[in-house]
Length: 367
Ligand SMILES: Nc1ncnc2c1ncn2[C@@H]1O[C@H](COP(=O)(O)OP(=O)(O)O)[C@@H](O)[C@H]1O
Ligand SMILES: [Mg+2]
Image 1 (cartoon, rainbow, N blue to C red):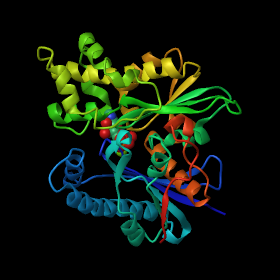
Image 2 (cartoon, rainbow, N blue to C red; image 1 turned 45 degrees about the vertical axis):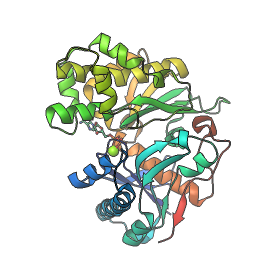
Image 3 (cartoon, rainbow, N blue to C red; image 1 turned 60 degrees about the vertical axis):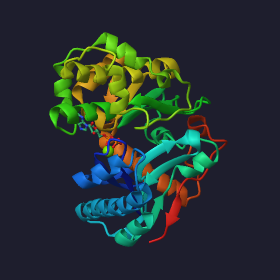
C-alpha cells in the first residue's frame, strides 16, 4: 500500500519551485518523481520587489500569491503526469510558500502562498503555513529541515548536513541513539550573493558550475571584512534571509575598498559561503565524521572544492550518494512535514528553533 505525499519548496534563491512526489510507506521514503519549474521573469521580479518595503505592498503581495499558487499547481500537474499518479492517490501536499520577510525579532515571518487556491487547482489536501506555530511558541520558525535531515541521514557516527540554498544552513546529527540533541541553524549566505553578483556582471541567473569563480582570486582582505559580520559569531538559535544578506550589504563593504575585479569578488563570495559554513561546523559540530551537502549549491564545483577544504579531513559527500538528489531534499522535507501535520505529530525541534516546546506545524486546506 503506497503512502503518497507531495512537497513543494521555493526558497530564498527565487529560482523557482521544486516539487517532489514521495512514497512514505518505505523507510527511507522513495522519491517517485521530481520536477523543477523556474519562475517566469515577471513572477520573480514581483517576488524580489516584495522583499523590500514598498508602495501598495498588501495588494501586490495578495496578487502575487495567486500567481504563485498557479505556478505551484502547474508544477504539481507536471509531477503527477510524469509519475502517472492521480491527485486522489496523494494524501496531502506540503507547500512552504515564498518567504518575503523573515523577522522573528519582530514576531513574524511571511511566506506568500495561496493554499486554498492550490487545493482548488490540484484537488489535493494542502498543508501550508509551517513556520508560524513555532514562532508563536517563541521560536525563530526556522530552520525546519533539521528534523527531516535526522530522519533521512542520521547514522552510527555523527554527521553534518549542509543545505546550500539562497541561505546556507547546517544540521548536526549526533550518532543514532545518542542522547545529544540534533542542532541546526542558518550559517549565513549560501547562493544569494553569488547569484546577485552573477546577474549583475554576467547577466546570468547564477555562476554555472562555479566556472567564473574558478578563474578569480580570493581577496583575503575583503573576505576578512565580510567575515566580520556579527551574524557569523552570534550564537544559535539563529536564522537569516535577504533582509541581511543581499547586494546592499555587499556594496557597503565593497565601498571601503578600491574597485576589485568582479571575477575576484565572485571567487571571494564563493569562499565566504564556504568559510561561514566551515567555521559554523568547527564551532558547533566539530564531532562530525562526514559532511553531506544538499541544495542547489551542491552543483557549484568551485564552492564544493572550497567547502571540501573547509571541512577537511572529513569527507564531503553529495546527498545523492545517500540516495536523494541535492535539489530534492528540502521539497521532500515539506512532504514529510505535511505527513507529520496530518498525524498530529510535532515537526519542529525546539533545540534548533528556540521554541518553548515541540509543536504540530501547519494548517490543512482540504481538497
Ligand atoms: N549548475 C549549477 N552551478 C552553480 N550553481 C547552481 C547550479 N545549479 C543550481 N545552482 C545554485 O543553486 C541555487 C538554487 O538552489 P536551491 O537549493 O533551490 O535554493 P533555494 O532553496 O534558496 O531556492 C541557484 O540559484 C544557484 O545559485
Ligand atoms: Mg530553489
